[in-house]
Image (cartoon, rainbow, N blue to C red):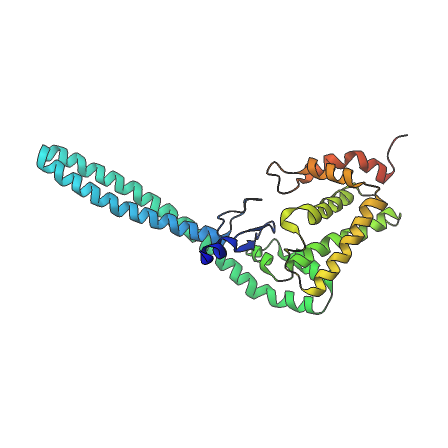
Length: 277
């Protein structure tokens, strides 16, 4: 019983959206991305069922064939043989489709392994030099490569998701101070990322993979982000709650950017100075 509970509680991070999901999930319940570990296990279960069904089918059809042959003669026996061949062809087609699917998962795993060997050493070296900006830029350059989904398993990936939001905060601060041009998209993305970091179930600091130094930095950044929302942008907690609720995807688990943009529209004019008197 204890082993069963331990298995049920084992969770991992989605390699696509970063959500905290069950290891046995075939797909991420939040973004729909394939979880290679869960998908491979599910595939093997389906494959074993097909093999078992085929073996049982062969036994059943053989018995049917013998029975029909004895009772109704050769013409019906030939019909039975045709049925056996047709069923066998269907089963073979299903088996082939599963092999193709298995091959696709294998290619993905091979790409991720090759990616990790090729890029993780450099990524770790830049990180250990303590240059967060350089590390983030290098991360950005890797996301479009084959096998990049393995980046979500890099031990410091969660930290740089938070750092990306903090860097947007710095840019928005310059904009609000008049040092750079007004940019509504920058503000929208910033509010989107801050609220996601604070309110999405899969992006809590408690569940994030952070060492002690990283956690301390992230908590400090989130305090600054909260001040920016409430003091610089003048948003109240009820307004933030309303914006978040209006932005939620129909699944209720994450925010939709376009919905967020629409929910923020009444406030954008206030922030950018375009509100009509």
